Length: 319
Image 1 (cartoon, helix red, strand yellow):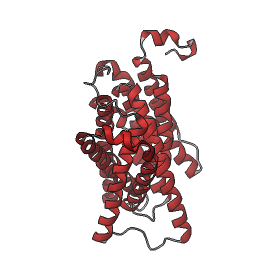
Image 2 (tube, rainbow, N blue to C red):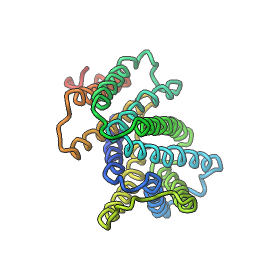
Image 3 (cartoon, helix red, strand yellow):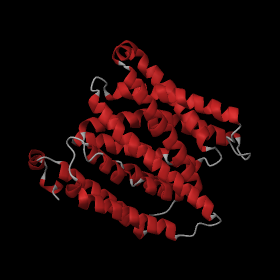
Image 4 (cartoon, rainbow, N blue to C red):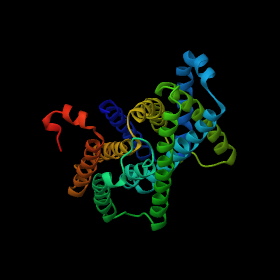
């Protein structure tokens, strides 16, 4: 379990960096960021899967392909487009904090799975997580929104809620399917998902080009494009392949109610990176929010520990 928690924390740290990309590159549309990122992810996955081609072909079934297609469409393309749109419309803090409700939604979706704790056992850790999210939203939405209209803010909130729904379904469904198909290890599943997502990313780019959707603003420069390709490559290699592999490894070792709690690391790291980008310290409510979120996660970890594991823990790790 400790190894699974470490993997989930590292995945959250990488995903927090990915959330910064739409904020740093507002000149590029969410669908262009999504199409290029996942097309590169597909290429990287294809190269990594070549040595495994024979083994994957022997194990892959039609049901696996259909599940990979659903996971790619909902958990990768749709999620990233909606989240990138929300970040560009209302900023990284409100968007990441709305998506920060993931610990609650994934926990609720995983309550019936084997190895999960009951809602009664998790009510206080979940209450801490919710209190942290309430604190940060009071701080964020209590500030002035400048020249943004209410329709722009509403669109951003709705996009963030859509991202929350899509990734909640993805995380719960992916964890369950991985346990049903233990013949695929984390690396193999990441490669398969990456190749399917790459095909969909290329299809998205072709569809946007055919429909004539705006891809970039007229203010883009050569420097913007250099940063765009660097960020897209980083998202593809780190945010997609590496972080996904870490998360799949964590999902195999943790019950859904606990893995749902550990999604909160993405929100915490995104906030920390955002403070560095804005060059300021967190305000009191922001600091209280992060402490409550982390406290709720640590409490949930303790609730999942078996008596033997609790006895093996050093005294300073007690509640």
